[in-house]
Image 1 (spheres, rainbow, N blue to C red):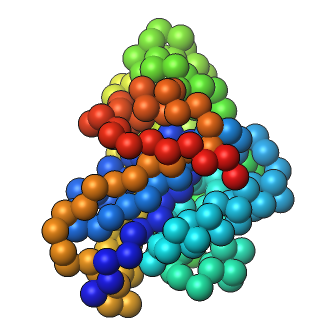
Image 2 (cartoon, rainbow, N blue to C red; image 1 turned 90 degrees about the horizontal axis):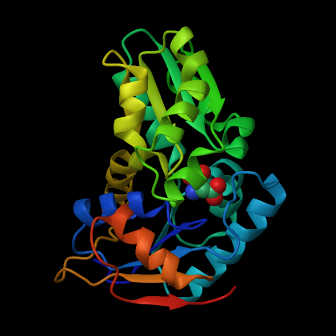
Length: 264
Ligand code: DGL
């Protein structure tokens, strides 16, 4: 048993979709969530920059005494998971392998679509993770950089969002995928729109729940689970606390009580 907090981080707000799944799956765990709102978005930045930012956040979370770290950001997982795992004294879990696993379980045809930020798609991380699990899978990837600002703006079902989604997703429809991986933490908020555009034959997979399951298993295996009373969660951002509080409530489905500002 270990009552130290679990560290969860993202480039900003999006990782709250993963935090929400963790709160539900592991209600006894105290979570410190760090959102790098001063430097979001990570999607268009170089792998080196994303690795540097991610390492700085890891150092901060370790100083706060976390027992494990969840990278609740696809772009950071794509560029920095290996480096953080090497330098961290505590376990580090990312969102890509769990998402790939969920996709491989859900597909019937083996033709899988992946959408994400420019950085995530360019890294090829999802394709590698899917092919490691199912070598014969056909993977079609599509960067959708405009989705993040649309979601941040709260345009979940706006006609402009639908127009952009139709344009981005057309090649995936043509490729006849039967599973679409939402490879970005913001995308679960536009799930109804994406489902409408892709049609009923395509299963949408987001990695939040699968990641929470992997984290639970990892904590159990290492005897790190907390078994005290349910805990309050802490939220820390590097800038713009009012926006985080406002949009964060949409991601989390509840009000954010305490939000600290810590510029790294
Ligand atoms: N959190 C990022 C991800 O999941 C999206 C936002 C960003 O570009 O920083 O890839």
